[in-house]
Length: 384
Image (tube, rainbow, N blue to C red; front, side):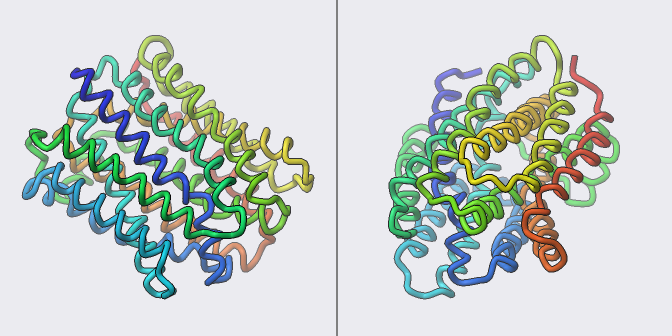
């Protein structure tokens, strides 16, 4: 493994995660200014459909123009989209650019995976993925504090403008260090051939389903938790900044040591399934909490992310031990789980909101995670 290149990608991952995280938990409330909460999820669904189509095409795109040029183009598109969202008076322009921005983010995570997988060794995959996730998650932890300072008067434009500025160091680091990146021989399998491969590779298939469930959980929590806590419970954005910072700490505190443990001691299966149990139970309990005490909410949301961090590092470590850098067809499917989840998640929640009160979304989500998470998580063959 090239340690300098790995550190570079960790640094790029930090700045990109900060760019992504700062608007993440306020975007649904921002969109709620133009559309009712029952249809806010549609914006995420459209972006996810676009992402899904482009991920299917991504192996072919990489074979033609390479990962470096593709990444540079997507970063530039994302930069322009954020500036339009920040300053355009047109609701239509904002809606279109919001969709393009979300799609670019999803695709860029795929591109960064290609860079990182190219320098990874299987015997330390858990450590490498743990460090990569920790660098990004550190950005997620500090991002709500930025929001609490920037969003004092409902000035959402400040959020998207600062987010756009954070793309500049990512582009600089990319151009300075990865311009000569040597692309691997990307797999040429098409969609149906990849499905046949996954049918044979049962463990990879099951971990893909687990990743879908985790992303499904994130889709509901990122879109609907800020709306619920701000509009229904009544927390200010300054208070929510503190709550979300505490909530996200497990990703920084736990994922690196858990990745090491998965490599050296336990394997991923035990960590994965315990994570699903913790996340499901605490998430379900949120439906019945009516307190306006921010400490209670911070601790409960912290608990959901303890479980989620266990699930996330287990999935990342397990999956990347099972593939190589030229398996871009399978990597495409892995990253497709996020947009697919952001199609089914918001659509499901939007439909449910016609029949149940907002708070019951959490108990339904907990039930889904517990049943399907354990059903698929228990089927994988551990790596140790």
